Image 1 (spheres, rainbow, N blue to C red):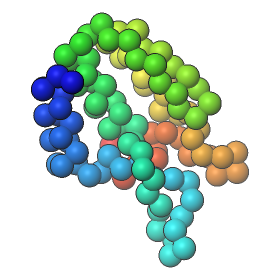
Image 2 (image 1 turned 30 degrees about the vertical axis):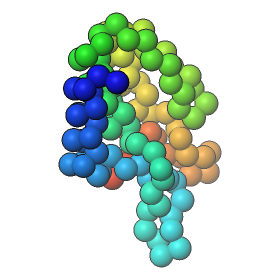
Image 3 (image 1 turned 90 degrees about the vertical axis):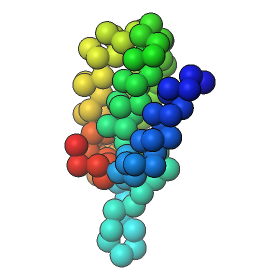
Image 4 (image 1 turned 135 degrees about the vertical axis):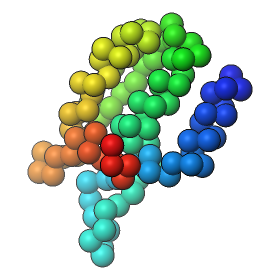
Length: 105
């Protein structure tokens, strides 16, 4: 892995714990449950850093029931905003991907 990308990843991991994603269920005490996944904003920031190093990188991703391919940096910038409103919750308790986080962006 590229040293710059590793440094970015390690820095953001240590400095911004708010990239933690939340689930659509609450804990027994009523607080929001954290899940072992990165939020929509953290994913965006990671891929943005990756595309600064490899602008022609092709990325295949899957969110919920939607598979998305980003063919390069420009394709990512075009398609990514539309992923914000993908429902990663349930039909009873919908939760858009952009809202499933603690970062407040």
